[in-house]
Amino acid sequence: MRKLLAGHDCTTAQLRGWGGIENGQLLGLAEGEYDMFITSDQNVRYQQNLTGRKIAILELSTNDLRRIDAAASAIQDTVNAIRPGDFRLRSSAFHAVHCLAAFCMISWHWRV
Image 1 (cartoon, helix red, strand yellow):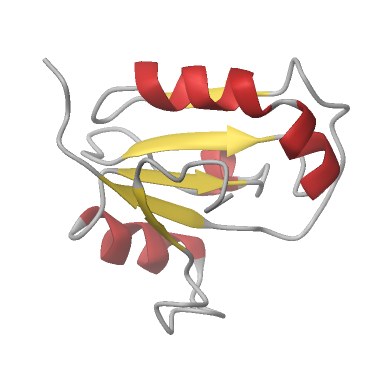
Image 2 (cartoon, one colour):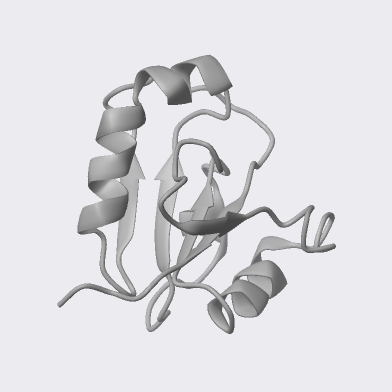
């Protein structure tokens, strides 16, 4: 993901030392420092109250890097179009699979 989003300041929960932190707390930590939260955890929208969140959330339907790479253009378009507080599901380019969460958090200045 970091390669795919090279134009953005992108990191992962693991690189931040946040590995193993549950989604609710992780979203809170990320919201204080990042503009967007990208996850493949398909339960985040059901398990967390996303109302009123300032961080944009993009849910990918897979963490399979080959599928993500194949859908790179669609993901980049979504990342460029998403706004603070938005929740977007990006699944049309993938077959939905159940998988472990893969996180990426992005910082940048929103374009008006």
